[in-house]
Picture 1: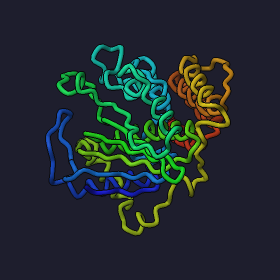
Picture 2 (picture 1 turned 90 degrees about the horizontal axis):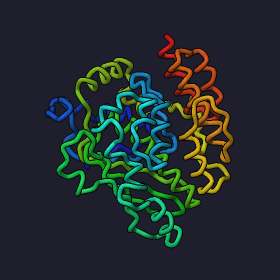
Picture 3 (picture 1 turned 180 degrees about the vertical axis):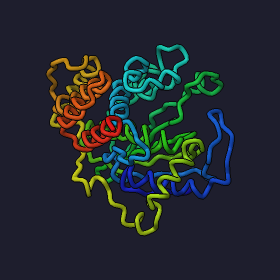
Picture 4 (picture 1 turned 90 degrees about the vertical axis):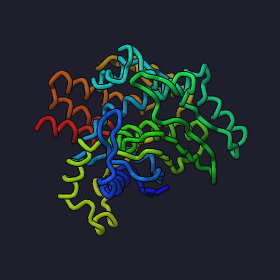
Length: 335
């Protein structure tokens, strides 16, 4: 197994693309097309997982979708309608056009008729040294011989507390480096990580993503690697002295839970997910009123063709990492 040790998603993304570039002669066919795959499993260690927003322009990640999908997962939902508002392509992963079979949040809270998150929180409160806190996502009865389009890639999560920090390890059977590991996965898994740490009143420790098949589709990877290579981002000196956006752009992370009980936060979460764009709504936690609401309203302004107004609205988001990524993403479309 090889290890990518990184500060955050921005650091790790460059290191991962560089790692895969040495595997370009080892191409494999897959269900979704040809991939370049690392020869052994890879463990990516995010030392500051709360710095979860990717700013790399070449990747052009959609921060609105990633943020909203993370909240949708924490609510334990599997309905297609909500996430499809932020990414139409999500319909490609639904067998019936109504639900998503492998939705992680639904697996965490509802699929096994057990709220695994609540059980793990209670276990770790009772015994911080517990080593049996496994959050299961893979269901042998409905996944192992499934012919549908949506089967969980992330299979289970381990939680443990050490030195008053919550450590999280995620196991993944098949990890697309570009869209998964350093795209959606880092956002929604680190949001779960932060939620659990807040409920347990401990610090957020390292997040380790263990990827059995660490790969990227060549139709995307080749062009992306070429553009990054031209920008000299793989130069040893550049990588060693990586200029992190969370430092050199004055960008900050804003906590998800702010002096609010986890019970009240959960009520806010479900309330927000039912909110209609531009609707006046009161929340207990400022995270929803001053982070989630501006992001939601900015997205729908953009969808209505009012991109200038969207760029203005997104700046009302007090989490400057999400605000900056949202503004940059909208600006690229305005241009």
